[in-house]
Image (tube, rainbow, N blue to C red; front, top):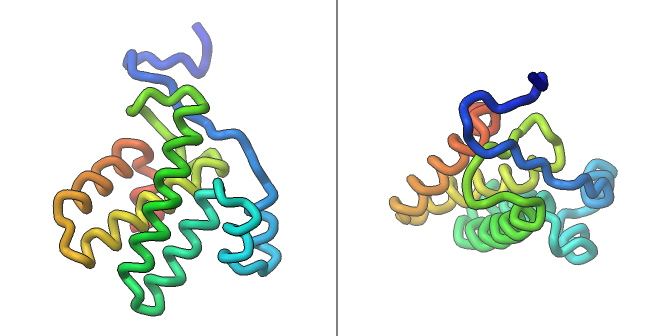
Length: 137
């Protein structure tokens, strides 16, 4: 029996391919807007834009950025074999951009009164990665 065999019979974890460019630029101090312009498919860049907007009180702007990052992440997950459910581990760093965007979308949805979307996104985050839900709050 393989060490990583899924004994519960659910789908295997999805691990997005690594794209270190956006992560390295952000870590080096490049603005998220510049990173998103250079790497428009980067969920991490959009999630960071969502966080910045939220922190300055621009909740609708945060919602829009988060939604973009979320949808870019869904596209990447599908390209990686994800079938609409199953684990997306926080522990795999390339997954974090999507998970951060999903968290930001839930947070902004709650703030603008989109209760159903807040609940759906919060549940999706917990189902995808309990670790991400814990880390991101």
